[in-house]
Length: 493
Image 1: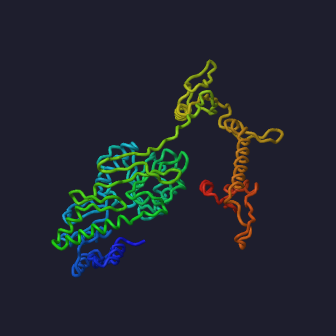
Image 2: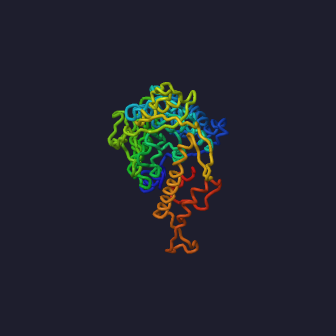
Image 3: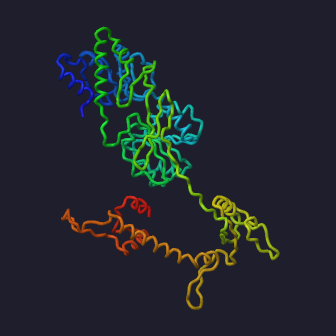
């Protein structure tokens, strides 16, 4: 794929009447550690003649280039987030304005998502500058966390967020880290429908995030100023390059009359690009742009709306939320709670005529009783409290040599093993059936024969039963699953 400059050169070479292009690139490499000499390097370019500077990404080197631009009145084209307007006379920023971006984010969070609690996750604390516009207007609870460059420390940070009551995350991290963060969120069980993730990197929509789309799972959204044409589709840059060539011709003609005229011509031009028309405000910033809002659906990231300075936030394809099937309350079920009086957890306060505590919940108080009342109100069940005469229970052996327990342990012990064995058998058999039905578990028994049609399954019934015994023996399993959605839960065993 040709760059814009290469395309312009190709157009000129096909038409002899145009002559040779006047604009040629001059690229110099300045290491970050040598930012003190960046001013001298920029001045060296003046000897060969410079029409304009394109700002470097490093902030320290960028300040040095700005100084040269301001001193010698040379236009500079900015391509980054910036809040410094002191050099606006000779600077043009083709990157979207941080104030307009802040307005868009604020309207999305407050008007559409209606968040009143936000966790802003930054890759670097310096990135907070571009969020100042919406941070000043946000009236809810705000938590800011910085991940840093060391990805080994991310796990502790995500674990801390998982243990909190945070559910809404605005992530300002490079798009190539988006999948790593979502994997950590999956490991820490942060993929429920109550979680919401919004990525602010413009290029996040280029990723294939379909693996993270779960039914009744977390909401994943992102912003972009580039049309969403798909991961493998072309953008069709031909018309944009032709319009760019026309704009360059205007600047070249203006260069013949004045040094500042090319800058004014560029500042007043409407340049069509794949990010839309580039229009500048009175501060030479790009405050009017089209920002798409995309949400992860079953078919990938799909555009659900957009934001512009004129139309503000517009949701064109609202997401239809599934109606939740109300859970049947347990109002007809009465659960039996077995305990012994123990201050301050379980304390009887009402007694019958024989001095025995009543079984109704209002006859008891204490920490555990308060907790039971809250759970019963939320879930919707009734319960009674029974006292065991043998307290917590102990181990006994009868005359025939059988072992039994009394007290609370005895009440639970008499039926618990039947449930444990039944659960173990059901889960093991279910795992065996999944392994038999999945095509990923059928392997070629002859590695040297790449095209062999013979396939065999490594998981037998005994393998499935043994798989759940190995965690108790503190050793690894000799066989493992090839299915992605089974690997993650099994790793937690």
